[in-house]
Image (cartoon, rainbow, N blue to C red; front, side, top):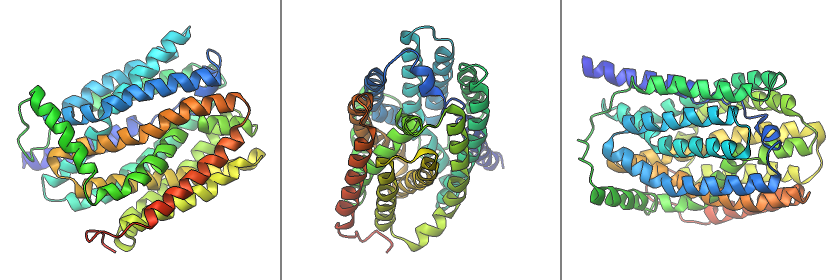
Amino acid sequence: MKEGLNKINNIKYAFLITVAKNGWFMSSGWLFFWLRFLTYSEIGLVDGITVLIAFLLEIPFGALADLIGRKKMLILSYIAMTIGPLLMATATSREFLILGNFLFLVGFSAQSGAFDALAYDSLKEENKEKLFPKYYATASTISWVINAISLVIGGLTFNIDQRIPFFLWGFSYFCGLLLTFRLHEPIIEKITKFSLKKYFIQNIDGLKELFSKYLIKFIPFTLVVLGFLYFYDWSFMRPAIGKENGLDALAQSMIYALSSIPAAIIVQFIPFFKKRISDKWGAVILCVLLSSIYLTFAFPLGYFAAIPMILISTISALSFSWMIVIINEHVDTAHRATAVSSMYMLLKVPYVLLAIIGGNIIQGGNIRWLNLAIAVVIFIAAIILGVQKVDSRDPK
């Protein structure tokens, strides 16, 4: 009975932590705040270098989570993700701003694979791992709803003081930190005592899982589509597009909030789509949709830019959920966190390049040409993915 309660509580607390970690109060205004200290070129360089460091730590953190336990890794990561926003909120120079951003991204890298792996193993512990797509769909819906609420609050408080959204962001992650202490480590396989040798073996084995015969076909999807979407959602790209089309911080916060509604609804249909569309063709469809919609940013849209911005957020929610479910379905428990971390590591490769190159292009006033090039590359990825043979494990 106790073990059953622990397993139920893990999923319950996973949903609550999902609420805490989606308090993105600063999303609509952070670029305007950062431009007080840095230029677009400097923001791109700082962002690229910081994400590169996080990129190098992604797999090691996933392997460490598989070895020492996901709960311990989550606690450490949420400590960093609480301190980071508070440093940015109190920053009076670019140095503190950069340090706060670095701490947050390192913490986020540490939790990326551990959180999903802990949820999956909590279900597997009671032989309910087939419910993971449903769990992930529900968690994604929660994410988008909370994101919408926090964006509206962030946009309104930004007009009062640009630092308030950063304080709210830090407080939200502090609540997440408190909740991580309530988690229980799922007992699927006994956690191996940590050693440096086993740590490196874990890294290599987990990375191999992502390059297995089945999962390797999704590398173009991970690198190009998820890599770009990660860049669009997390970097200066989305707010820069809004700024280019005359949208201020409050207007962007309202658009992002509206984006959460269709995104929250569509992810609920992931189990439905998974039963009817193969993993491969689901990814191809998402590629083509994203390329077609993003192409519109190559033209001046004004306030009409809100329409493709909302649609891209919906595709982003579907794309990440689609790939996370695929990985968790095809990787064993011992390497699951490492494999998911490997995915997040790979999508940071295009992020780093786009941040450094894109910052300079935008600084030069050529953001529309950059958008055109991105749309073309995504369409090429769809072609590469589409011509591959369907593996026997692909349900369709």
